[in-house]
Length: 329
Image 1 (cartoon, rainbow, N blue to C red):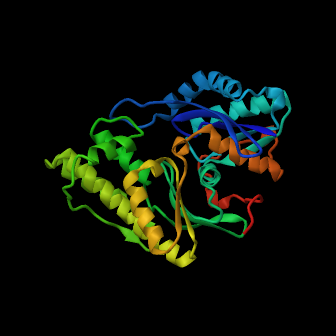
Image 2: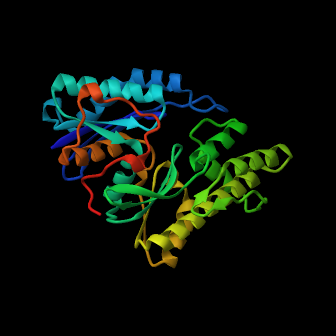
């Protein structure tokens, strides 16, 4: 079996082909880059996706040495995400599924991040920390669904970095650049630290960091402090969730999973509770077709498909609302 997965939830249009044994045969993507100092413009990103879609899909099939006649199904990320971007991918996937008469598997983008993390690390029953531009959540699997044990009360950690980046005239996503700037300093500036039970709140931290910058603080010092506080807040919430769930595996996945400071703090948390620590393979931290293709393959195996006419995008689709019949527990 082969599944073609299409990702278009935000800045990335990606396509990937996976085999039913979990081998990722191709992963092609093209990323919309916003102008420095601005965030993602949904309409412009959608136009970008429309322009590159046919090439990305064709290159993915060619790279995998798979013909459309070999496909057992097509998977599409129907949400959550930016409406205009989601609709481009959905249109492409519906058209291909209808023309080649293959099943269409609906995929929640967040579940895709989790499943690609589990696939590439070998984790079996982890406490998951999903961190990206669209998500900051702590979850564990129970009763057929991923259950939320903690999350952000306002903006995500990825949004925090991207919104701060706009103030220093950087394009989004900007997590790697924030991390690079923070490595030039070790001077800590006091910033708001807000943890409420297992939840975190980043909006006040963002406001304070921008205020410090405008008051004359060095950029590198602010970046260092912003990263230290934001990652420490999340690590505290994760530690509390891990103590409660008593899971013996900790899995970090999503775009911000590439952050080395966050990795270290969570590795320390895992060690305190004698849990193994896992990070999604680096090529798949960010949005990509592979996460959709593999989750789609799992859905196809479990006979989770949707008629082409019913494949409607869901920009606010929460991942804890998704039934997961292919996972026990």
